[in-house]
Length: 318
Image 1 (cartoon, rainbow, N blue to C red):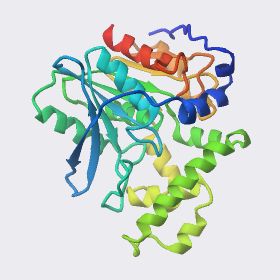
Image 2: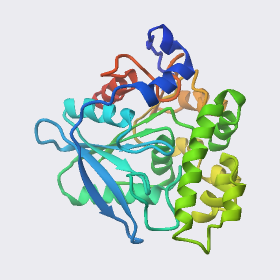
Image 3: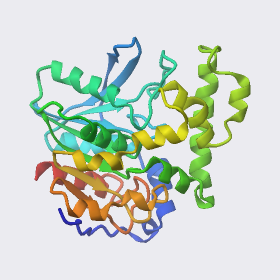
């Protein structure tokens, strides 16, 4: 499938990648959306919370929304996407990964960019409702990587999953870490690190045999957080092993359903590997759009409707 030509042209201030990223994350008014929370008990005794919103009429279609690093179902990009999906006849199941719904999760492990067993549990839970005949997956950043890995690492998955959308997705986790480590990204890097250190410190109280104050002091970078916590908590040798085994780029050739990937050219979180134009040109199922603008999950059109939200629905309705 050839590269999709983008016609996204935002107003002047949103042509700056950092402005569009920060505005969209911190300043965009929260979309008006009524949600209902459901708690999903996981096989290992832990839980995840799903925030549901519904179409105006009973629907047989549901979109599972997956947030980014240290996000949740209340982020404006999640609520904005859920709202336009609801308006177009889709129910929306906005997922809060383990420990992201405002309540600490129970197990030593939490979530990561490749933890597809939790996504599988969510899908199976929704299928057991015997309500939906069509499922789509919509992921942002880390959530986009997660769904692409899910679709590409399995020989089969439920037939109800028809399409998927990945927005601002780090297809190479190591490459994106290197991009975040650039000086110009210090604000985002420090923000992520502050939140992750805070969670580690809270979790130390429940797992003192695995998490120590001395290790906490060593967490001075995202790489060290993944070395000290993410990798050992989820069964990887170290951070680089985690990045290598979970980057979705390697799984793209195996994807058998239509997938739309929207990565902006001025997304400072992404490395060159996150724009696989040559690969996409050889595959009929992959649709890649690379707008010049958009930053990281910052495709502003109006406060009520983002370009990414509109494009996702257009793709799903094609």
